[in-house]
Length: 152
Image (tube, rainbow, N blue to C red):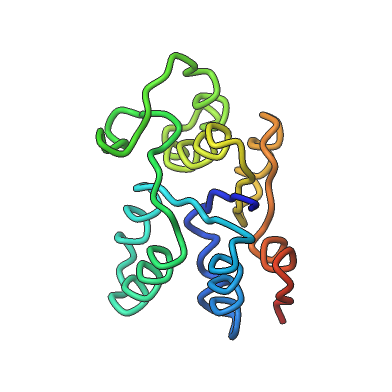
């Protein structure tokens, strides 16, 4: 089974491409993949102002994902029961790029590093920083192609 940590922006193409959800659900049910999510994903999607979009994305995320603690903790960002504490603050800082606004992204990438699995994101900055740290990165399109679904 191949495991992936989803960045919050990775759920949008699954939600917006007809058949993508069904293909992803089937790959999970068949034991081909496991999608890991964190409280950060839920927190970010819960902040979407459009109620219908917010509800739709949260339902998809929670249906497809397995909730795991983040791979690190960050003051004012982490939920204590849903994070891990460790001594290697360098990795979180490197992924955050010295910008506190990137803390949530860093926590998601650190989780992929901790879980020893690929990160699925559609964000270039996070992709570059993660690859610099040796984390495998795919886009949602790459993930869907890996399970045999071609996005239009």
